[in-house]
Length: 295
Image (cartoon, rainbow, N blue to C red; front, side, top):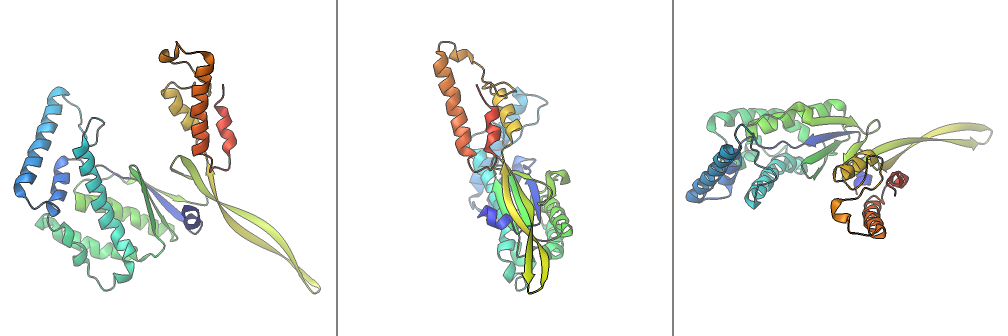
């Protein structure tokens, strides 16, 4: 599915999804889901207490909502934020055939609960001006972890319009500023993009075909596109070396907990790691780069 779609696209926007700057933004998004006011006040109180407690323990440190020590509640809030972001962004793209019949005010109904009145007019005017870019029928959206990819068959100017829209989208709807460098526009024929552990790209191959018709012969230059995936072997070895599984050259190193193990057990453990990596990257056309990890 991914290979078939990418072969027909021209540009990709590699988007690093920003995190909300304050927990209050996430609580406001819950107002459209939870009708119990007391529950919302209780949630606000718990989040503020958590934030203040962390500031007392770790002074002068920026506490993000999605740090490593957060619990299920913050994962739920983050998933809610992603859902709202994708609903407001991707839903108009999927319903592009109805955009000529639906006014932009209808698309704003779901955010009337938590958008301030003074900002509502700005959002409405902004939405009316940028609604036309949703009419591109060849827009494709993919999200993984904290990143997303937006692909289109349009021009570079159209992708810059999308970039402009996304930056202001987070500013007006979620009330925080996202740096423009978090959205990188790439042309598929010239650059590769990182996705699910691969460096993927679209290669254009040229083949010459000689045709002869009666006494005349002519040469046709045929261009074909091929989806190619490469293994990011250097970042892969670097991450394994940070975990102390191997050196920066790809050779395994012994861990302190392995001191009581025999050499054959250490080799078997490293072999299992290599086999799992080889199995995961079996879809790449250049698996020979995995041989850099050796004993």
